[in-house]
Amino acid sequence: MTDETTTRSDRAADVADFAATDTADQEAMAGLAGGGKLTILQIITPRRYSGAERAMTYLSESLVKRGHRVVVACKYNELLLQELDERGVEAHVLPIRGKLNVAAPFVISRFARRVGADIIHTHLSTASLWGSLGAKLAGVPCVGDVQWLNHKYWYLFADRLTACSHGVRKHLIGQGLVGERIEVVYNGLDPAQFCGPGDGRAVREELGLSPEQPVIGTIAHFSPRKGHVYLLGAMAQLVKRFDDICCLLIGEGRDEQRLRRAVGELGLEKHVRFLGYRHDACELIKAMDVMVLPSLVEGLGIVLIEAGFLGKPAVASDIDGIDEVIVDGETGMLVPPADVDALAVGIEALLDDGEWARQLGRQARSRMERIFSLDAMTDRTEAVYHEVIAEYRGRRGHEGKSETEGSR
Image 1 (cartoon, rainbow, N blue to C red):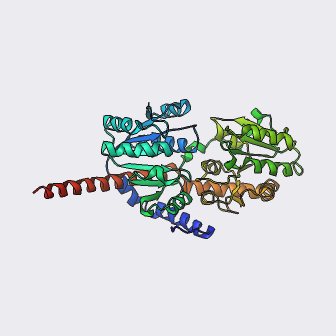
Image 2: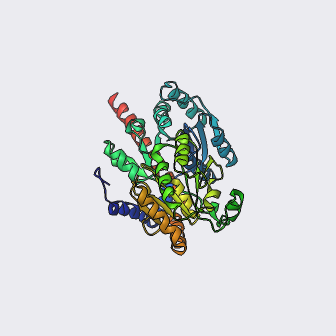
């Protein structure tokens, strides 16, 4: 990967190389990951329970199942704490919120020593700033996880970075960070979570939707960068072709009132449903014929991975990150961002040809199982932990030796 803008074929090669590494080098990575059980301190400062929070939760549970001790330190978030508790992951609420909270690294440092952390793994920008400084004070290495197109300054003190996509890695390198410090670790899900009935009949019945009714939807925080307004524009065209089409908008956020006004202005009140934040979002995907993600920017798009595991084809923006999950014409369709016409055409094509849509869905599931599994994410993360710990201890040993020799 270079600092330069890459073409789709270049990005596809990146993903292919990643997948090849994940299969051909699996035993070697398992060897690295077998360096002993660790005490891992996860630091996160969640605003909601969304993509980054879910990725951390799934990873933590998987690490616990492999025998590691995982301790999560976070600011208060009821849903996150509930999820961690249900999954058997130890969690503590600490006063670490806010980028002006200069006491936070000292709080984290003391806590890391108290739990005997071997490594600190940070998630989200505030946690990464204070967590990496706290790691320096505690004398333990730190890995910073980057799930979005963040500014590099939040991650300067981490020993290593994990990026959720090659797109995020490219963004960080473009800001001057050294590529060797950044490891791509795709978010992964447990395929076993998606083995139940997938036809969505029960969900449709609950929502008052008929089995034959065309249903599309998206799961995303309501903010301009998620592109909901373009999906509504596409719906205004689709209702002319599918008079009973329904669009499910699952999420919440500051843009909700603007979107509700747009629905009224476009006359889509009978066709668009705002379902709010739903803990059972994956169940709602089962009711959809097509998942849509019209984002303008994206780190990866974990909802596309969920849809793929459920065998649902997707229409999504052709942007960095998303183009690593969706293979155009193979597992879904990629369309130019902010292009209402192209979005409508893509959705219409899948609704028109149910057999092709189902084929894309089957291929999507196969791709997710191959590249975006929870085991693959955990393998790669364990390998990073052990590499970073070994490098950190090696540096500390070398520094100690140099100080001893200098005092002679």
